[in-house]
Image (tube, rainbow, N blue to C red; front, side):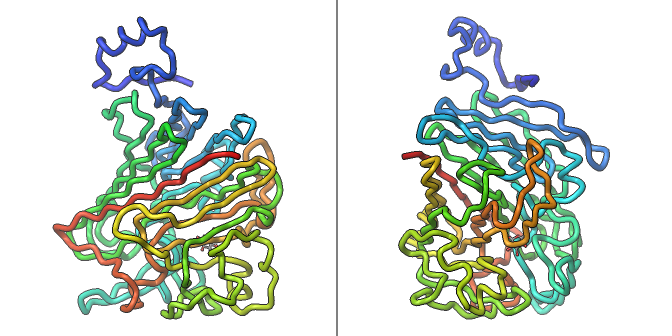
Length: 380
Ligand code: BGC
């Protein structure tokens, strides 16, 4: 893998590294490197590696902002890749259920592919029956983002930006989105989102990694134990569109307030599970203040890995990989069968543009949208 040193990387820093023997824990040692990954739409695509000094490494491409691999230590301190994905760019271009991608302009579903904003009706590209899913036909997961290589490579972070033009997929306004991925020294994958627009628009940015804490391709996720910090969820209809209600989880298979195996109630006779073909719902997070708050914790006993999700967002989509069917052949030639990965997508509530009682997803000129989500890993 070739390493790159940005323009700002000074000769003094390079000399300091030489003196320090280039030890990876030295503050001037590069924490970000870059390798070619192919090209899309005539634009070069790269695979960036971010590493910390505690055994964690993320490989991220500027195509779709996709996290291609995420190495996280297990209880015996052995790193393992815990996200589903592919070895090559061409596989991502062929077919992917949003493996590891940044999803936008509007993550999750907008019912009937339309919404009204300030009295004006907007029609979007439908790509999920009559509805729009994850931004439409060519969402933020399928475009080449610009990587800002002027940020110091001594920090394990990658800044990606994308200008979504006025009218793209039917959404109003030129929207400038920036996503910063950081691998922290406390074994976190931190994602900072920011956006501005020149016309009123709607926005719901999220990240779509499929996790398997036992390792990608190592069986299903049904014995993973999940805690969701939510007293309520947003029920869906048979087309997976939110009904507008906030329903208490109490007494339902949606109650994950105490850690419960994902598979414990997934086959229960329940309309919500039937509509979602398993879990594919948004939970209303119990929030404290405006900052990062604990949304979810997942533990996997054999590896000992624990993942916590912290976010500034009001909701989280827990999707139990119900549409995986073994046809996606992933890294190392491993097929990803039914429910072999789960997603925890921090977000605003699905179909908010058509649900006035939900927290607003409208972004107006002059406003700066920001949000942060942290996936924090440990092992025990
Ligand atoms: C959605 C699922 C969808 C999946 C696509 C999830 O975020 O909630 O309904 O099938 O993404 O892979």
